[in-house]
Length: 340
Image (cartoon, rainbow, N blue to C red):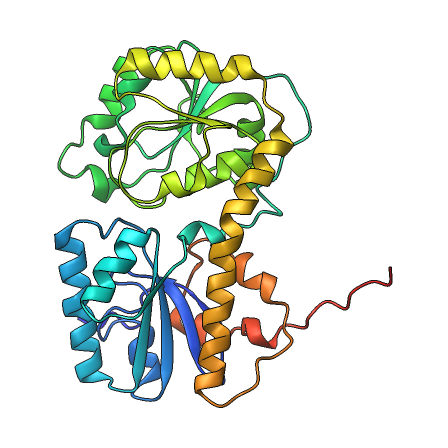
């Protein structure tokens, strides 16, 4: 089957040297013979690969290393650098000889969109932005009376348990399923999500294992404190005890944490500043990596508007031809500083 025209998630960072960015999971950016690797052919190219799921466990890490070995055999001029969500992932890739840096996938959330919304009444004690899939552990919300649920429909994720969305409705009869209006589902825009976060006191992060959890960073950038449970994947790097609580994975503990954090009446600007401070080192590491690639290739780093690297979407979806034809970040014009 020819999959080379299937949509990909990624963007053009630079044309010369050729640098592309995207997530790891096939059939996305680096998938063997199915996406941009095939378009590029065997010429020098750098693939910067974000992780959407934890590699602190063996199966996905092993699959990555096998995949990179196949890519190197087919395209020896390609270079792959993994952008890890945690130092633990960096260590595991390093032991295997795979180039990597620590750079959470959440650095690609556009903080000019996910910002503190205009003040309006808080009508929900908590909001949970999470697909209706079992690993999100919605049962831990059952102690919360006023709850908003934001979710996307991912049929492939519930293939092994197709009844789960109905189970969530049964276990959370008072919850507001905000994607639905009169029984009709709709995808929310980023602006819609920001508006619902602004109506909520607390953001919930209840999975035990996943990746960096984009929703966690979105809560914080919008000034919403977070109740989390112990987890593996990387979201803890975004959190601080001054604006989050680590609850035990029981409904009672989660409900108590929501109440306690709500009573703190935290300044949303304080929360957002903390979130930005934790994203900044990862963004700087990525920009330093790009500068190092230019040096290795014997080229000067352009004075581009590099902030646009972080403002084109977490996983922008487009055709391979669109990626190869789009204006590279390195070609965007740097903003001229205004006089003081």
